[in-house]
Length: 251
Length: 269
Image 1 (tube, each protein chain N blue to C red):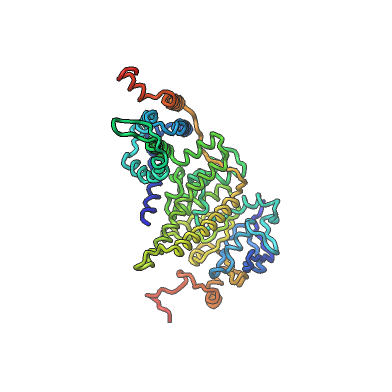
Image 2 (image 1 turned 135 degrees about the horizontal axis):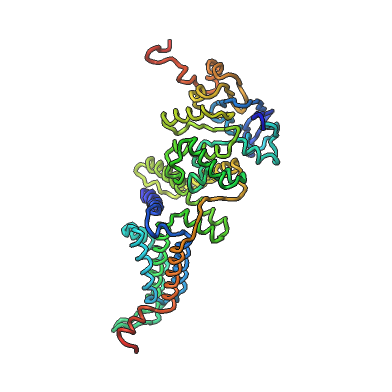
């Protein structure tokens, strides 16, 4: 796959119990781009993400990853290409030790044993958690769990990283470190979050979802200056863009 | 509800013990699992009135506890916690079974009391053996051994998952119970309707979590196969350990050592 394009066209999804999920979502993310998906609670962010690796099947519309349309036949390849990092690391770390967990993906891809070993070690060192390899997940701190969860995906060498609220539950330093790490990644990134400061640091483009529809799609800086839009979508300018309450209080 | 929290931290303590170093710890999990299985099989195969023939089996837990350095206090506490269940199972035997079996001077002991004693002894031995197995092998070691013994994968994976999520779920349950306790001012808050909804919620949450875990598995290409990296190599010491204990257990099974010793001392009669 030469270009890791994510294309979503007219995506509509309704939950089995009739709750509307998302409506007519269309966008295109090109290779190496970092895109934030923001919006109030229940805007459909997670629902949208679950379509990107085929966990949910849309009622209408389609998803294309690179050259492949997302269908039953391409699911395997697409799940390798799109690395999903879930909101709660406890959901993602299900094996007895961190090593086993990071090896889970490559093993399912049918990769030879010594290559698995190499990949696991490189994913662990990339996240700076080599020392945790033989630990069971329940002995890890929230920050360590988050790093481990990302490592489980990195070992599959995905082209696209899809993350749901990567900074929740982290202390400020842990969050800072995570942002610095993610910044180094050259993957195409799609990040759903409420942490707009993280968006300001990581993503050059932002898609605003509200009520299951796209409200805005454009450069992050422009969207964050549109205070009216942010207010309507239950959001606030990132703190880094707000004036200091001590030195320059709002007029 | 603090006792539940305690029970789970105890559980992880048992697992922590398995990370220690000793000659027993270094043995292959398969060897230890097999020995404990043979041990339990021998014990349950005795007739219901056996008491004296079971005594030599205490040798095994005693040696293991000593060699592996398992804190005895902790083990006894766990044992006493479970003892009431065994008592409950055997408690009706003395009531229903009055067949005189044994007379010591003026006292006649009925078959019920003998079988009750037998149940308690068997329970003690098997429970100790199971605790010792986990404490020197770790839960995941036991799962790996089960897998190598070609136990259907669904069982070993099931156990592995259970063990992985028992801490997450117990944490969830504990938080719910704490929230209830804090708001049930003056009342106990243990009314059946509160309790019912608590358990119901826990079930629903578990269900949700299971779905999310499955989702995480699928997105990493899960196709029904589990793979756990744990190269197990059988060493001479493992074979010796297994052979020695198993033959000893089988010997104890067919030769009633205490009776034999008694005969030797008192002379055959």
